[in-house]
Amino acid sequence: MNLESLIGLVKIFPNSKLYSDVLVNVFRDYPEYALVGLDEHELGEVLTSIKGRDDAIDFQSHLTIDLAAGSGNLKKLAYYVADKYLSVKKTIGKKIDERTDYYNDWTATCVGCNEEVNALINQSDKSDAFTPERVLYAERMDYIFPSIQAEDGKTQFQLKCVNCGNSNFDFYQYGETIIFRERIKSEDGRIIEGELKEQRRKAIVNEIFASTSAQVRRTIPSRTYTITESKIVEALFKYYRGVREGENPNGPIDYGEAYRALEWLKRQNALVKEFDLDDLTAKILEEEIGKSETLKLPTAVIKMRPKSLESIFRKGIRSVYQIQTYEGEIIDLQDLYGIRFVLPSEEACRTLFGKMQKDSEMEVINFKDFFSNPKHNGYEGINAHIRWKGILYSFQLRTHSSDRLAETDPRQKHSVVVNEQIELIKPNSPIQVRRVFGTILGLQKSPLYSS
Image (cartoon, rainbow, N blue to C red; front, top):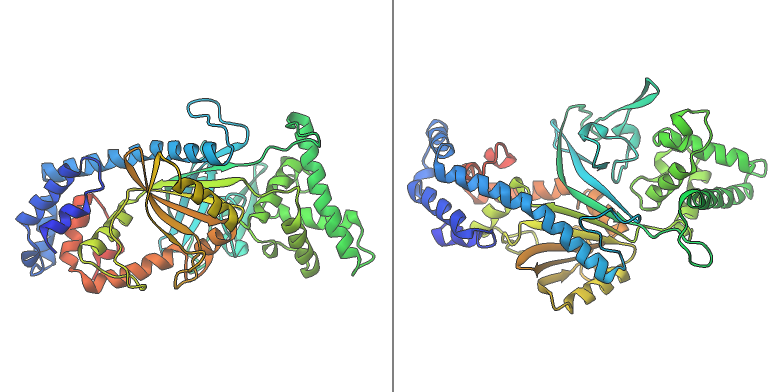
């Protein structure tokens, strides 16, 4: 490690001189050759001293402000791209367009094994609102929610780790998501609102239930539409309680909620096989949802997040020590802010990125096409770094299916990728330097704090 590498590390930060000065000053006072000889007690005294330094405190306060400011810029970038290239009305600072929904992204991390459960939660709700209809990309719903209890007319779901069975989780918000949906229109192209919209949603749900029933009856002639509908709604109700009005198991169907549940299944935020349906009905329902032209995927799911301290920490250490990935690459800390567009198809991803490359207000610094050349773990998408209004962003384009794989494939999901990075970092960097760098950042705990 050298001082030049530290200065280069923070060149992307706003107020980069402030950050570089602090890093240089701290590591001049505690150079690497001196740190590596310290025992645990001696290192603890150094870390305590750094925590009390005015320049380190200033570093942390400015970093907190810069990361928080990124959220507003990310939202402006999301609307700039969506408005210009996806025909989405720009509504910054005004009433949200009726085609959009805003969510906070929350993660529940198991304290036993670091396995994660991710959820989209309405901005008015909090982290205790982890329920099946909000959980992203569930694969073992019965494991994640083993206990379902009704209390005061509302269902209580107990969260459980699918990996180790632990019920203790740390909750944190890590970003925001905007979902753009195509407005439901009449045959003459007029936008349908209010009661007519609900009637149209009911018609779409009934259409899928009817086509599923017709296919099932070819094998089981006695299975009427009413029986098939009842079985599907009963299966959905186990986890999506809103499909029955008032969450009453004997109540009438809430077709608006049933429509949302089917859209959730089409995007594979949950899988049909997770529900208590016989194999034949489950297979046919999945096929009918997939091929339905009236039940549409969202126009775009846009996920935005500033880099976490832990991510800055990992990438910073990898950059300073030039630690290669399994593909033989050296990943520098190139950005503080990330945005991802999830679109219905690979063609849509390529079309959008092609337009961005020609945008005079947007500079594509670099990109990699992982659709054409997937990563060693099977990851597919387009990853780029772009500069917009003077700020560098990490930009990803994925399809709904590649996004699901990136979150659930054992080779690709975030916790596995992070563990791979940790395995590469630990033997190639001194723990004492890692602890000092993390303390400067204000990182309270990290898997990299152990040898």
